[in-house]
Image (cartoon, rainbow, N blue to C red):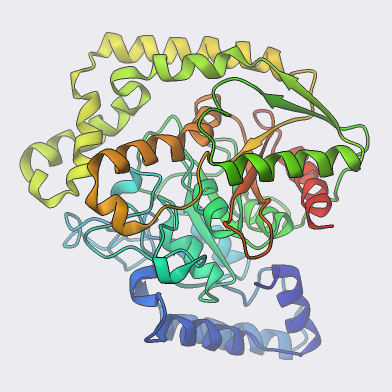
Length: 446
């Protein structure tokens, strides 16, 4: 995988063209032996090639191009693209009206010169951390592909589009971990911004209080460029902060329970590297994390998902993935008073968590508790599916609930089972977190 700034440099120096990049991506998508048929629900081949030619023509004419200009990206099938039907990975929406306009986040990427190559597969309605889809198939993780392991979700196709050369980067959504989980399991970098910092209009909602829009890409700098474009900011990557003296907290509450051995080992190795590079690492008790499962018992904040889906489920439940419908229905018994209690409890917990982490520059922990299990085993065993999904989402969801920004950065050994180091910043501290993330990434790659 080539970082975006290197691709942009190749375009600027004439070593490659946007058409070549798009043609190469399309060739990978169409490879009969590859995952393209399970990764993409729709390919915008003609439009992408036309946009590439237009970008090349401007460059040939001496017009200075922004950093993302001419680079092919994929977009999760959660976002509106003008003229397309947004299905959110579901059969139910196949005959819906096409979108009249791009979602604002995608429109901003196009305005920055990025080329949308197609719409990627996902867990139906973004409601699982495993990335499985019984309607359109499940893309296989690039690691140990013969075994066919899950890519993580819900932005499953997004991750594999990047690892398999079908796109230079991908846009996903993250309500409980749906960018960071597939990034971790597939060896990518994923960024979940502070919720609502990037507009979510034109994206199918899961839980509007938690929904966020984020990139999956080869590096932290790549994520920063994409994030800036979607936020309507100047498209540039922040400089790395020096690691020496940075205060990193390790929360020894809830998030280290039931770790796979390889995840535990890689986290310890990552923490050692960061400490060797000069970071001050402190174990802390983070009591608010332990109360999140209790607050959300019975569905909690996902009452918002029930509000979105209740009429459709009552009328068309047979069209849903049964595992998705069952999870959405969990919140059907919550009253308005129950939901209000959840919101009030969340507000109080956010204030308490902010006080706990105020002395630190960031929080670090494993992105997921486990590595990617085989698809077949999850399809065959309902109990295994449920347990794996809970563990997969546990660590990431905590920081959606606490309204934080967070990165997942690869921490695995080359050739080993991919797993990620989550680096968590303060609410609206996105720029500083990305600068810290660049320093962490550099230390882990040494």
